[in-house]
Length: 366
Image (cartoon, rainbow, N blue to C red; front, side, top):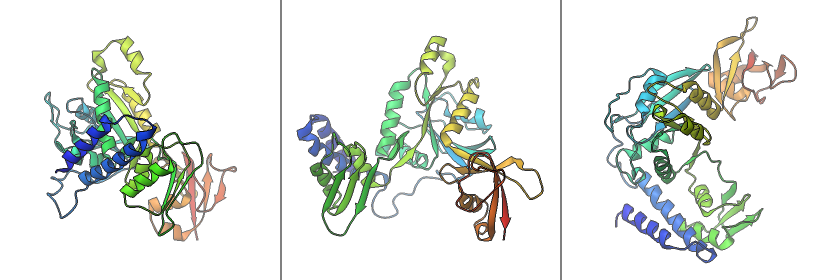
C-alpha cells in the first residue's frame, strides 16, 4: 500500500469520526500517524533516491530571503521583475516559471533576496508537480509572500495554507509553549500549568507511544491541541511570517478595495501597474524584523550608507562582530555605542550588550 493511499485512508477516517471527548484520544492517535507518514513523504527513506531535480535551490545571499508562493498565473513573476528589475519569464499561460528565479532588492540599506518559485498546485504536499521542491525552498525563507489573484482569493488561500501546513510550515504562528524532554527511564511525566480543553494524560501518552517514546517530561504551559504536541515532538516545524499579496486590483472597484484593506496580513497591489509597492515594501520590512547597525571608524563620522543588518533576536555586540568576521570578537576590548539601547551617548559596553535598530557602534580593539 503506497504512502499516499495510507494518508488518504487516515484522512477519510478522521473525516468520518465525530469530534467529542470520547473520540479525542482516537483522533490524537490518527493525527500522530498522519504526521509520521507526511514526514516520510517529505524525506523519503533509503538510498540516494531520484536526485533533487536540476538546480532548484538557490544560494542564500543578502540579509533576508523572501519566497513568492502562489498558484500559476497570479502574477508572481511580474511582481518580481517590477520589484527587483530581474527578468523572470512572463507569459499569459500557466506554469511559465519552471525553476527558482532569484532577484535582489536593496531596501533601507538591507539586501533582500527575492525568490520567484514555480506555481504550486493542489496536492503539492503529496509530491505532485514540482510542489515538493517548491515548498522545500519555501522552508528556508525568512518571510513568505503568498500571491493571490484578487478575483478568487479565498479558495486559493485555503489551499496554499493547507499545502504549507502539510509540509511543516506554520504561517504567522508562534511555536507552541510546550516543554518536551526525552529521558531514559521514569515513564511519561505529564504536567499542565493551566486548564486543558483537549489534551489529557491519556491522549498525550497515546500520541507519544505512536512515536515509540515511553519516557519523557511533558509540560503544557498554554491550552494546547494535539497538533501542537505533534509539532513539538516532530521538531522539524518552521514558523515563518507571511504576507498575503492580493494582485490585480486594477480589476475591482474602490468599495471592494476598502473591504480588502481590513483583512489582516494582507496587502493589495497591482504588479502590472506598480500600484501600492511602497506599502508592500514597508510591510515586508515590518515582518522581517531586521535591525540596522551603523559603523563608526575612530575619529570619523558614522557611515550611514552601508549598515550591518542583523536578524531580530541576534543583535548583541557579539553577534555584530561575528557578522563582520569570526576572529574580531577575540580582539575586542570594548565597544562604544550611540543610540536608543544605551543611557549615555556614547557608552562603553561589553560583548553581551544588545543593540537596537539604527544604533551607531565603534569597536575598540585590545
